[in-house]
Amino acid sequence: MGGVIRPPEGFEIDQPLFRGANADLNLTLAMALVFFACWIVWALQEHGLLGFLKELFAPKGESAGLMRVVMVIVFFAVGCLEIVSILFRPISLSFRLYGNTFAGENMLETMTKLVPGLGWLLPIPFYFLELLVGLVQAMVFMLLTAVFTLLICQHEEGGPAAAHE
Image 1: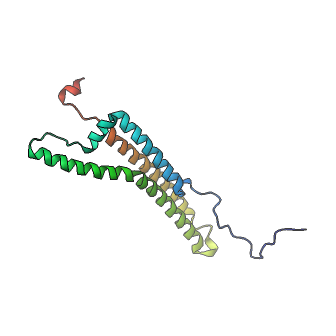
Image 2 (image 1 turned 30 degrees about the vertical axis):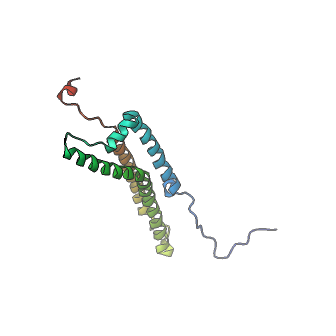
Image 3 (image 1 turned 120 degrees about the vertical axis):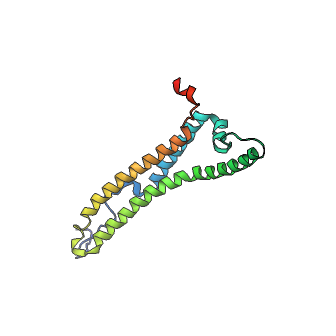
């Protein structure tokens, strides 16, 4: 009778049976990149390529003479910073969600191994805390994507005449 030889002290599960999907950086990065691609499409649909570039680099407000030249230089520098900000948004979104989920997993594992006899009891309150953190992080992810979309797709009011149309 061939079989598996088990040690007398039993076995230990070293990998979780169920793991949060967002505890993998690949999923959070994929979600952020999908949003980023949609954001670019929405921005180009809303403004067009030239309008999008104007939104980033063109000076806002009315000015003339030397002040106009200074404003063009300042808004060009601000546009370059905005490009960097836009490129880092997917990284920021993905690492925020991944980091909080990964930290929760580590906390649960630490609570499990803290007191050897009570490894099944100590993490129970922290599971509920992790559910709350997961809900909050999902809402933060959604809120940030909504704010990023609003920032590029907002319409400027044309004055009092536009309000009556």
